[in-house]
Length: 354
Image (cartoon, rainbow, N blue to C red; front, side, top):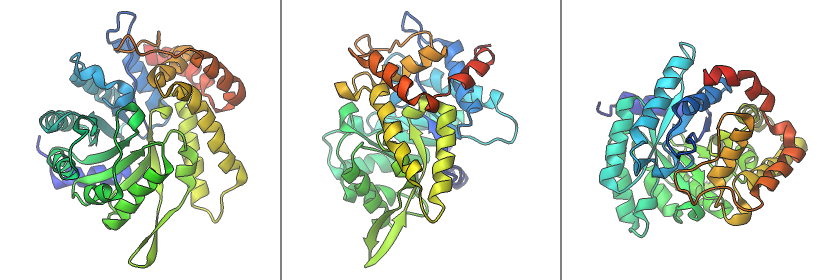
């Protein structure tokens, strides 16, 4: 399948709706092999929770799926499950993680498009150390294969610092449809906004928050920068988040709340206060105390407690819960349990695992 203007327009229109897109984890058994039944159950959970799409093959899915030959199988399983599970007429934004040097990334993009994915979320981690010109050439090449979502991944988990000038050049690429902003850094988040506005791309490049440490504030805040002596204001329209791989039905409600509040004349103190509570939960799930070492296993632990996963295993045996992380998850469950969706999961679990 070749990329057409229709594909690009469709992907752009889907993402402009402002969606809750969970980053899909990888379900493994005790032998660290793919647990197909539970992988499918996770997809069904997210779809029944009201997610607007799925992001598969991304950081939360574990980049190492490529090294063990699971990339195509995991992508195919997710999109086949989505097609079989959702009601006719419900349209989802299916996002495939794309990474590696240019040849690998382009091949992954072609594969994803052929499977029916709408857009590719491009990680630049494999290009670390390259010049800005080389990075842009890489992005342009991959954008010829699939509508592209930029990914500002935080350095603690393999990303790199990228300038406002880079984001201006990236946003000017015609086949770019969105940017996931996830540097976990307010100044660098503003660099993306500045770049998009400088490229005059604010109407065609949709911003999605990946800042799991400031989800609510990203969705509520109008970001204003100057262009040609005039203020230009842009907003984050949705979220594509590892954090939203857990307590997902609550995350879908939270996005709607934020969108409704942001469209009004003012935002209540109650809504603003939610940011610190959600961020506190994230501190436990993502293992901030240990520089994010247990960020994937922490999400697995929440899903394990709910019965969706059998264990917290990752492909890398050295990845797991950090000392004290389980106790931190206990704490946020006790303090912020109203944000959880355990009852929703309990009600649907048998159907999802069937």
